[in-house]
Amino acid sequence: MSTEPFYGADHAALQAFDPEVAGVLQSELTRIRSGLQLIASENLSSPAVLTAMASTLSNKYAEGYPGRRYYGGCAEVDKVETLAIDRLKALLDADHANVQPHSGASANMAVYGAFLQPGDSILAMSLPHGGHLTHGAKVSFSGKWFNPIPYHVDPTSEDIDYDEVERLAKEHRPKLIVAGGSAIPRLIDFARFRAIADEIGAIFWVDAAHFIGLVAGKAIPSPVPYADVVSFTTHKVMRGPRSGAIVCKEEHAKAIDKAVFPMMQGGPLMHVIAAKAVNFKECATPEYQQYATQVIENSKVLAAALQEKGIRPTTGGTDTHLSLLDLQGVGVTGADAEARCDAAGITLNKNAIPNDPQKPNIASGIRVGTPCVTTQGMGTEQMTVIADLIHKAVTTGDADPEHAVSREVRGTVTDLVTQFPAYPR
Ligand code: DSN
Image (tube, rainbow, N blue to C red):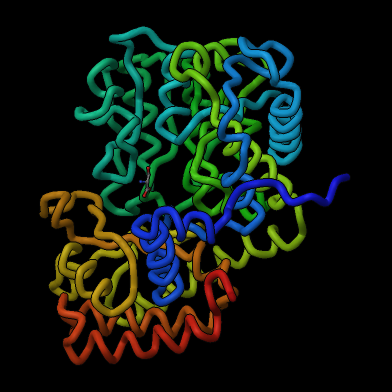
């Protein structure tokens, strides 16, 4: 193989030509390095993944699929897409994979395109109870073009109310049932969903965007044996490029491929597909599997330590990379907590909790995830320190970065990220 460097990621050229944009790239890296990143849906992808994205594959038009493209010159990108498909199928033990979705929302749109007609009903988790915008929210295409029937969490357990799912399924007989969302801390009972879908002859779709990285790392059970189709993003726990993908049963392969292209998308982003191929290779390593297990262990310790301090994790804890924390007990809103943490060098997001009395842009909760800090090498010992810092910032801090508590917490954050750097120099 040639050792000639391929073009891309030429920092000096960018700095010379466009110092304004180069400056933003540099200061974003500084932001990442200098604080704690606890947003559950973010991660720090590897230099190998970033390099594939900063490559000449970005130039290539390749509508179609490997071996059947609408453009010439696709021999090289065919190789990379085939690698990505084969690696993903092996990683998830799936019949069929489509690696072209540009994002999670694009992947989900293709699922609708493959199985539904406008006006069809879907049964999906309510957004304020932990679902996702693309699962029927009124402001999304999914709520405008389809008829969503929302299911909720049980008021006592705060976990999915499976009895309600079954009742609504029998009552409304939706064409499609979706499991998954953006703020579900517990494992999902895929077998129960499958049984409910089978009772009414519905398609069972799992939106695994949040947790597919844990499945890939063999840290939690897989939805693949149960679901007709599984859509996901590749940049959350999975740590790949900012993108999406779909796996499905062989019988749905044609419908999914046609729905991704030409129904919902045009030219695939071949540089991002190359980065997905790199990421899927990373996910198959023992190091990745260790990391996936550690993400959950860290998440459990962080949630338990916050609970001890009076910040209550909904459902009583977590089985995954995220916890959803109810701040009503400490009398602080999600919006204030987010701002106070931000001022103290801790990035997380306000989040509605089930039956939240606040509006979504204020919210009564925060969502906290451990993918980034685990990528940086932090373990359970650091999680108890982070719980102290969150508690201090939330309950006694201020949105002003110059406030004494912001400064004090930021000092400890600096110590942590110095010991466990993001993108070490
Ligand atoms: N915005 C993503 C999240 O934070 O969970 C979901 O699309």
